[in-house]
Every structure is written in C-alpha cells, then in structure tokens.
Amino acid sequence: LGSLPSRNLVSFAKASPAHATVAFAAAACAGTAATLAAQNVARRSSRGQARRQGLRVCIALSAVQERANENEVGTMSGTGVESMAEFQVFIEDTDCFIVVFYANYFRYFQRAAAMLGGEVAGIQPPLRSLSLVGVKSAKYAAPARLGDIVRVSTASASSESDAGDTKLWHCTQQACVGEQECASAETVYIDLSWTTRGVGPATAPLGASDPSVLVLPIAAHVDELIGAPPAWLPPGSQCLGAIDALRFFERARTTSIGGAAGLEVLRASGVIVVVARIENFVFDIGAAASSSTAPELESRTKVAVKGRRVVFEQQVVDPLHERVLAWGSVTCVCVDVASQRLVSAPPELLAKMSQVVRI
Image (tube, rainbow, N blue to C red):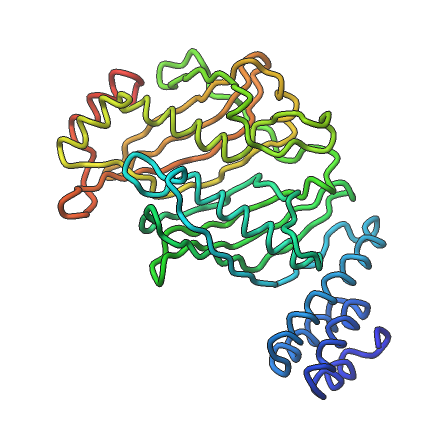
C-alpha cells in the first residue's frame, strides 16, 4: 500500500474505518502528499478507536521513516494530534491569593505534553523525557482556584530533528476550568532522550551595574532545582529548569514592588498586580547544564510602566560566567479588587518600585 498513488490510497481509505486505519499507516510510507490526503479522508470516514489507532500507527511509521532520512531531510513532519488531560489544583499549586501560581500552569502544560508524547509513541506511561524550553507567547485570562479541576488541551504538536541530535515539540495548549479559559500558550518542549546538546540562541546579559537593572541574588539550593537533567550530565545531577526560572522571575518582580510589605500596601489600597502575558521566553538547557554546579545565580530585571501595564524584561544569569540561562518578557496589570477592572498603576506601587530600581 505504501507504493500506491495518493488518489488510490484515498479511495482505499474511504472503504471503511478499518481501511482508513491501514491507510494512515500506508500513508506514512507514501510521502507527505499522500499522508495528508489519507489523513483527511480517514478523519471524515473513520471514528473513535479506529481513527486514534490509525493515527498512532501513522505517526510511529512516519518517525521510523524520517529517522532513516534525517541526513537528507532534517525536519520531521507535524503529527497534528490532539489530547486532553485533567489535573486537580492542590494547595501547593497556589499563591498567597489561593489561585494557581502563574508558573504552575506550565507544570500542567508539561504533564499534558508528556501524556501526548506517550500516546504518540504508543506507550501507556507519559513521555517523561519532555522538558519545557520555550514559551513563544502565553496569555492569562482568569484564575484557577484551590480545588478546581483544570482541563488542559494540547493540539498541533509537531517535532523537528536538527542534524539528528535534537528533537523539539511545538504545542498549542489551553487550560480551562469548565468553559472558562484560564491560560493559553504556544509552548516548545525538548525530548531529552534524543538530545545530545543544548539548544537556544544565546542572548546578552543585562548589565549588573546598570541602575535600571534590578539584580536579585539567588542561592541555587539543590531542592529548588526541579529541571530534568540532560543526558550528557552525570546520573543524579540537579539542573535548573524552565519552571524554576519562572519562579525566580517572580521573586524579582515581588522584590521590585517592595516585597511582602509592598504587596500588603497594594492590597490595602484595593489593588492587586497579576501576570497577564509572557512573551518570547527561552530556556537554554545547554547553558543551564553548564552552570549546574554554580553556587549562586542572579535574576536580573528591567521595568517599564506603560499605562495600565507593567512590563518586566527578565533573565536568570550565571554571574560567574555572565551566562544567560533563561530570558523573556512578563507583562503584569493592576486590577481593582472590588470592581475586577483594570486600573493604572497606583502611586504607591510606583513609589515602591522607584526605591528599588530606576523605571
């Protein structure tokens, strides 16, 4: 069947759900055009288990074929699969307002991506070798709260092979409670079981001596580093992870508004500051692995107030080597607690921030 022309493969797929299942697999051997044609027909003509089984077979055979041709192609075709997963919100997932801490949505997203990876690979356990390395963009719409069930959809996953030593997954993910969207993101994961080197373009560190840059020292306690170590580190190594970096970003933002005392002043004024967006977040797993034994890291932050938005340009840096391990832009907004409306940054907030960093 793999040698059939695209139109004949499509006709075969129309015959029955079982035929469509086989057509999925055959299309993997027949080339991209036939794959797309057979998949489209199979989606229309097959249902339920037959479609899912056929899709898994297609993906598995496609991966085998692409691995054999990596030297010629260099890019693996998109899988186009979807998955749904649910997670309960526990108290350790929440912040001082008893809503899900902004970085913890990426815990849910990473778990869901791992479950999708296991489904694609035809295995029951999650693909635990997937690790978050990028957030192209993320939007926060409404909070998930303690006790909620967060439903995460993961769609349009694809994988790429770069010179045969790196495999990336690009996902569109959404977290909802009931019908209410809480967060959505365009995420990038690396498959650590394939990877033999780091990825991510290097970026210049923010100047530690610049008065407009807040520098927050971070003791790299082993129990705080929850990143999965890449294969080239010794077994049992501890490594900074992307979610660790997002937590360290938050420490710097809280410090910039005066710490716990500053938060209390804001709360007393009836205003809270919440994360609204993340853009262009990159976690360089190769740099993080190289700095895995660094005794201290730094979170460096620049702040710009733009009307109702407070934009933080943030980095996690190994100060010994001036190596940037993670970077990105986090946009926060001020919300009036009583009306739940966006408001401009109150004078109390600007005064506290001006004491810590030039804005």
